[in-house]
Length: 401
Image (cartoon, rainbow, N blue to C red; front, top):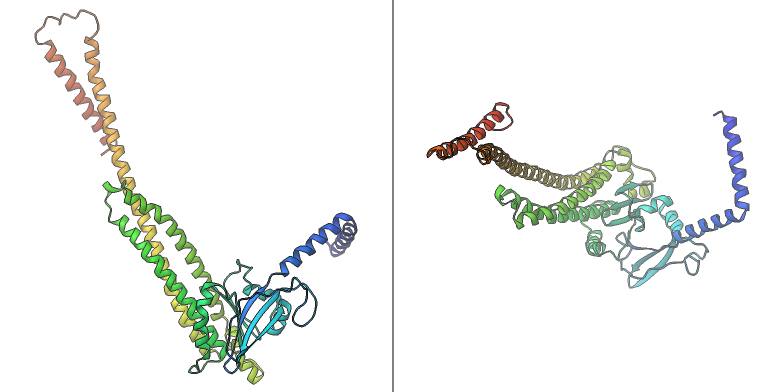
């Protein structure tokens, strides 16, 4: 299509849209769309703010604040934006601030689309470590946080795993022995907790799978119909599904960290404190501490990934061995069935002689004293010869061994 044709189509589409919007149906659809967007913005977020040493301790408040009811935010402006509740504690008195997503994006230097990575309502967001000019966005496992040079915002603090993580985070952030800047210390604590969570999950799944595999491996072919084997097979499928889901999760976390490791710009931009102190970013090659830290925890994630992959390979191998054993049992049953079919044909062949003499016709052998024995021996011999002959034919044709 030529450029003037594109322009003509755009003008026609714009005019049609205005005509539809002017009608009742268009206004109703537009009103429903506006109601849907307002409802999507009215969700409330809760975050804990951890300040750098010297900025005060941190205390958690469990109340969730939303501005959907009164339509005003902390700054006094009206609107329907999402409320973000941040609770900090300076000394003995707490300060509660209500922020919209737009205000949060403005104070952290982020785009609104970056806030989705820390919004718990977006459960389908992939794990990510995003580096921006004024903040580091972390979405790994159960931790959703925004790291800055002087503070850390931890979202969804009522989650049980996050509540268990808060004391460890508080203790490590207040430690003065580390030479790393605040944002890198916070990132290290997050990576420590994520790696520990992955290791705990792996240590829970692997023994359960190993016990099932040991039971199946130690069972003979003759015992494959027992209740214990059936129970093990029933347990194996959900365990294999759990392993696959966990492996996908570990792979996505590994990919998120590997993306940062493969970018020198991102690693050098993670020194947020250095940017504030010097007024400019570091050079691309000045990121030794970040690179070493990420590589260390990357090795831990790789070990978990390799462990789960090895367990899945063991499951596949056990399934293959189990299938081979079941095939061998099935072949035994088929072999027995072949023997029975050959025997049936052979006995039917011998019974043909008895059927001939069972007719009400005179043959001249009715008065012979040895005819019964001779005919019986001939019938049995016919059965045996027929059985052996069929087996020899099948072996000659390599159909049966």
